[in-house]
Amino acid sequence: MTVPRLHVICPDDVLARSAFPHLAAELLADGDGDVALHLRPRSIPARACLARMPELLDAAERGDGWLVVNGRVDLALVGDAHGLQLGRGALPVSVVRRLVPPHVRIGVSAHGTVDARAAAAGGADYLLLGTTFPTPSHPGEPGTGVAGIERCAGLGVPLIAIGGIDAGRTPAVLRAGAHGIAVIRAVWESDSPSRASERLRRQIETVSKGGA
Image 1 (cartoon, helix red, strand yellow):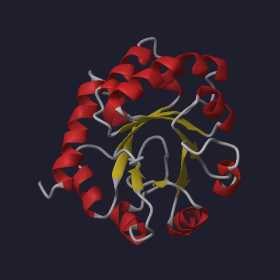
Image 2 (cartoon, rainbow, N blue to C red):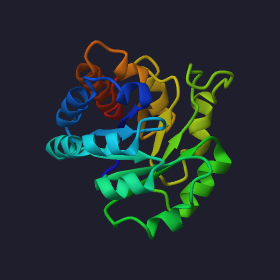
Image 3 (spheres, rainbow, N blue to C red):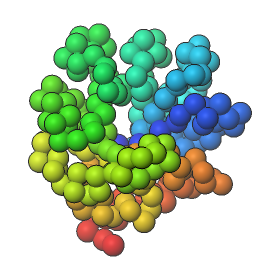
Image 4 (spheres, rainbow, N blue to C red):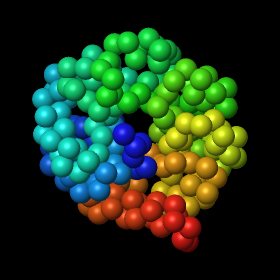
């Protein structure tokens, strides 16, 4: 199962939108096999998040994409998610691997070279690496820039760069060695999340083929 190159993170404020189920399903269904939608519930009740998952799973299947749950092994298991994202302080990949079905892909959030090496050695299927550029969601963190990606690019695990990434920064991030990007505002602050996702996917594809 190839790791998608565009990961769209859905924090609580996005999950709470009344239009979220429709917008997210549209985004997944149109993803051409290259979108992973991350549900990141922190204050949203697990039951409410679980109730949305069947529709999103169906859309992910139609678009050949992934539905990923961040930080909640129980929710990923009960909801039959395609992926599980482990954050800082989570159980080791080797332990989680024994808890989830073989088809579930496990990502690990890494914040530097030490984290990334440990996660790669531990068997992560991909790394969410950042913070790459300054972002309002992590005030006070200057970001590692593309140098942080370059330092981790030889680990043999797909790197998904996160943090302050938009269309303008995507080419530099990919050329530094990232497999793909993870975004929040670049999609969810758009008038059309589906069109914003499509633009980013097309840009990733162009750069990956050696274009501008």
